[in-house]
Length: 333
Ligand SMILES: NC(=O)c1ccc[n+]([C@@H]2O[C@H](COP(=O)([O-])OP(=O)(O)OC[C@H]3O[C@@H](n4cnc5c(N)ncnc54)[C@H](OP(=O)(O)O)[C@@H]3O)[C@@H](O)[C@H]2O)c1
Image 1 (cartoon, protein in one colour):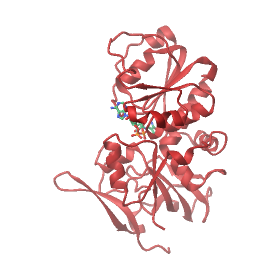
Image 2: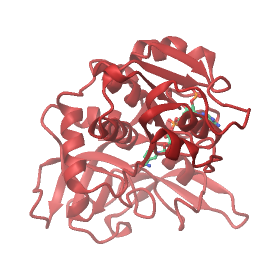
Image 3: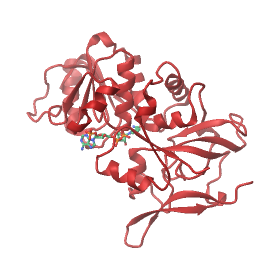
Image 4: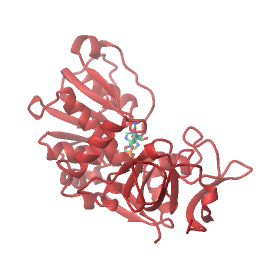
């Protein structure tokens, strides 16, 4: 193998359970066994990476660890029939960046089954503007559409709309002709959300019922939820007869304070979204949509680009709820 050592962001746990982030030299021997060695060109920063970087043991059990659940790069070595030397590829989710060294390093080694060839129509950089968050936003929209929610049925609510998943979901829905109502806890994000294509913006308070009533006035044909908790419960109680809601995240809360009435009186459907173990045929189909019919004309405007050195600051921005859109990481050449 040509490479002797490479750079990676390494999170280390100290004896007093503090977690420090440093850029360190790693060697290929630090990587696990696997069929495909990839030279990472771009990665991206997701909420899960932030959890891994601050020592959340629900995401990463063992430290020292290199986070990064997304990676796009070029195959250096392959024993997989799916890809060969020089192929441009994407790896998102599975265990990458959780307990497998992830995309915040110049090299990753993974099983062949995790690797997807870069679809025609996307560059490596663009694929990471989507990344896991964008893929999840797209998967949420895909599920609503295949369920049968159409633009003429009414408005679609998107929560956490300024975030990675929400920004991409708002953008695809708007581009596909849906009327989107975006929820944000920050007044300052209004122009950004309008630019993505939202027609209406409501505050987190306005979107969160405090009356405790089991059903609320029917407002939404469907919804993409990324936050969970009382906001998701309010959304489900406010969906019109036969509508559907996707659920992928828990930035607000993992709880769902709800009765069964929206399901048994309004025939509302709640759809779970999991990108991590999404079956390969669906995974490939959604990536092809992102590279083709759903490719966003304003994709580049969603991205803030950083480096391994800049990651620390970007992680803090997410923790302080001061970011918007997607943060991509350019690995050193
Ligand atoms: N199931 C899956 O496969 C999958 C895949 C990817 C992500 N996820 C999950 O989806 C969620 C969103 O991910 P992301 O990458 O989009 O995160 P993100 O970029 O951090 O965005 C989350 C957004 O939620 C809003 N928010 C933050 N705290 C909130 C609170 N307490 N109450 C209400 N809204 C709040 C913020 O918007 P405002 O400040 O504008 O309100 C923020 O922009 C996370 O829980 C993540 O783990 C799941």
